[in-house]
Length: 593
Image 1 (cartoon, rainbow, N blue to C red):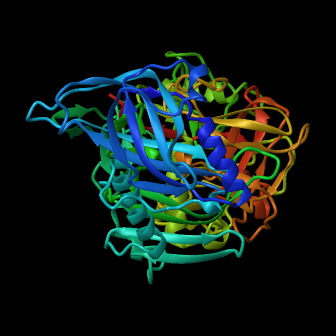
Image 2: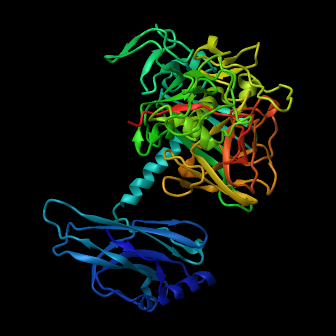
Image 3: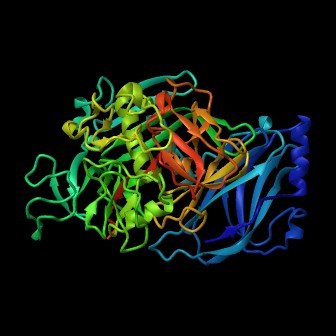
């Protein structure tokens, strides 16, 4: 495949551009010619014609990219080619009102590509898309030769336009559910299959929302679902259970998890705005879609992808984590500050009922330490991940047509008077009676979204897969789906195009009014503007100290969060060395075997 350098405008092209700028002429691009002649870079500007032209194709499409540049498309095939050649130089021709056709621009190949002769069976072709300056696009002719054939680019662009039109007008498929959010006007509108549905039972039968509490063995086997014989939330089976021909004896460790079926999503940015003074864009208006089916334009949600491997299900912690003490062979039920965070033989992060959530009140429970205790449970076990958290956030948004989880479901356990020296969490399991449903426990204030208890309120949960490094005023985000390392930005980590915005030296932030937009990370809900309030458009704050170096992140708030607690609250004001009495953790299991 040929690899071409930048487009160089010839002197003839510059002369034609000058006429455009003076308003005395227009420009009509006519053809792209392919030559096997090799020219030095210093020769290109002075060329008036290409030597040894092997193929020529009429321009099939001209599109303005801005007021001063255009994109020109053409394609060639080998159907009439009797001898092969190397594509070394491209020439773009245009009509000059005084001179007729001139060589407007040229580009040479960094690596020449070979066009084979036609063998009577297999057709080969090349598609060219050149972007060049015209000086004044208002005098550009968009006419093309009617004999020109549609290029591959035309077809791809047409499909993209069809997909975008579907998204803008609205999908009609029975298994697509969506919501439109106008962040500026603070309005929400149900779309497609979500229209006329109310949260709760109306979504229960839809595959993306068919989440079920279950108990998992350390090898990832589902031992029982809620309501089945042998299901328990105590952390160990009380009877022998046989699954797929394997018998798990009574006393087998069993973690209470929520099974999430795979789903696909699409985010359609209707209005974006450049972030003033920083890289990237604010999302101002968008449509979010969810489906159990991979429709055109949809992508598998990243919660179900691990290093390229696609999963049918993931398992998320039903409860805030406690530790299993491997030396004492018992669960720490009162947040004993004696955690062993070493590898393999260390303690294990756990999800069971009737336990006080683990904290870093005095023990060195940093994000790295918590990660190790998750890994100690076995292959596939991780901390709460930005990908799985995002999946829950998206499902909530579409189901409730809201971003405010407190107003949609309940405040959560976030109005506790601090002492301020203790871990003031309540015991897990208060919402067990709700099972897989959403709601809250009036006695404790604990809240649940479809089986996951206290995603907001009670205690912050550290979240993995999201890194950031900041020095002053802003920072850079990085995301990975495996091989987590809190101080890494390359390798498996990918940079996000919008900035982490905060203030140097303090925990600045506020109520979110816009999320950042990156087309490669359009599933993320990370705040980039903080002009909202405790109700709209999100109702949750982000706290971002932009002078920390490497950050560690936690979501959801703690027992004193008040109106700021919520499914979208992010605390990035802590470093990777932080351990705190308000910092806990949650488990995730992904079958990566």
